[in-house]
Length: 437
Image (cartoon, helix red, strand yellow):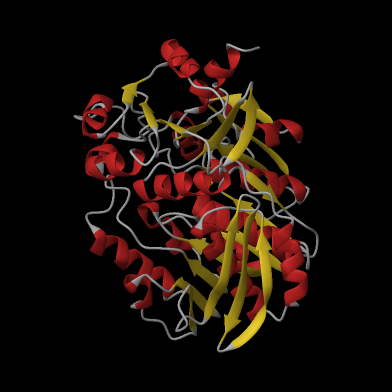
């Protein structure tokens, strides 16, 4: 699929994976352009920095000679996809293209209902500090490095897209029921992960507290990581402070070293264990791995921090109850004495309806909660549930908020304001900040 004569055209170039892949092909010296909505998205900055052309969707964009990479959100009925087929152009779906691309490297896939982006970012940072490493991260970040040994990338289970990948290694962070618009139930999700696990070539790394992950059947080595001594890679002597977390890592009774991360929450320690496990199996020096872990500052839209007056602003992608739990827990570790105010944008009607009680339980861990109108998706524009239904289930202080009513947040001072969601929750953050500019 890689040909210097190709002009790669991305339909949906601002998608988190699509934009990352466009950056990779640009780094490799290929001609790249694409189309998307005209609204601003956080993923487009990297494209703008590389001067990659982004056009509004239009049938006229599709011309003879293009090699089309179509985002998974766009069906064959989409005006540009349809035109590409009418012209007889080669049209490849995003996940199929990535599945071919990774064959040129020692590939490390990161799969799971949650934690993919953070773990991929950490994996790319650590491996890239030691050996040439290319990566594709679901925060819109992608990079190709010449003569790379490793390729770290996200493997998304939605619509079983990750079945297109046969990586050398795979880290599976968890199996949970999500994407109720596609998967029937947890068994259906498990079946998808089992199929992907069976395609891994060298080794599978799984979170040791997940019985579902541990029950996956593979013919390659399967290593567990976690906090228990029966895990293959486990953390002990854990110290959590406002500066981060420190811990020893052990493998079959052997201490691999002491590691520190300037990250927060148990999930960050677990992500680090997965990275350490892969690094160890690839023969990398543990002292060097420790040095690289210490310098990692996080990925986009995962506990991304800024300041407005005396308020600490957190921007986070959390859009599932488990992720909300992890985000609020991490914020409380870093800011143990401050009030935590959550501004949550529910993402898709089916997910909100499916997890209404779980969302309420997770959100009420914050001191105050504000819920925005539900953000739909390209596939789902309406539903039978409303944000008010979620608010009614939250115990304590919970209110509806819109762009026009962000001044409700002005009552707080010297606190942490956490904007969470996978849609366009940042518009509420910008509306809040605009008051003080």
